[in-house]
Length: 264
Image 1 (cartoon, one colour):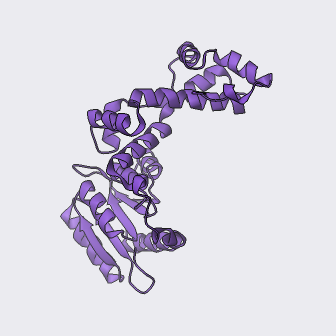
Image 2: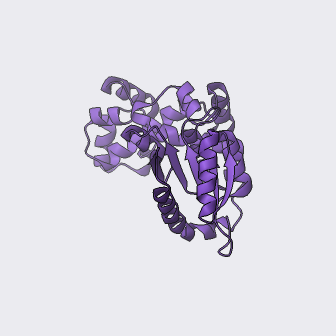
Image 3: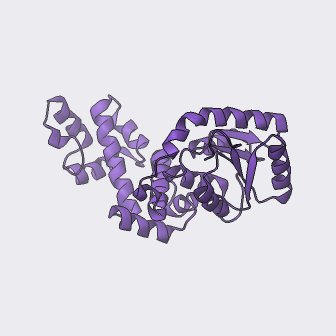
């Protein structure tokens, strides 16, 4: 992060040389310092090393795509406050939602005008200034550990897609790794496999919904990712020792806190 007396630094992450040159010319003409990376992996490492004020991120790149790179940036305490603007010709509503859900502050479709992009950059730099003070203090060491960053990013993917969770291979791809490594990191960092983590998260979410809402059990089952109410009831009983309906009845009768959460 730059100080108030120096021009903001913008990191451009794009694998197309023409796009890189165009963006560098545009940004330097408006007084910005510019760093360039050609892959998501380079962009992530450069962001860690230089802490730019803002990142312009292409979406479709070899190696590590822009969405996965953004997830890692947002999972790392050292880079999570850096605003990321996606630039992409992949500009459907679904793709925009994916980019924003991954942590992007904006999503600009290609082709774009230079004036529009610079205006958006100025807005997000101004919005980001109140967060700059947080960057002065060193980040907590644990929250910048590369393995923990991957796990944290994967946890976010899981939490955001619990109702229709993709397979382990796809979860790993979305954070720029492969299934065996991700499963090993979950065991190392959390003491459980990805499957075990998902199972616990689903039951925890179900417990909260049973306790705090009047939703039907079948709707809760669907919301937390079970294929049928029967499968939900079986998994819930195996973990909590009672069915979802009986658990809710117990809560309504004023049971003690030991019945409130899994693992107690």
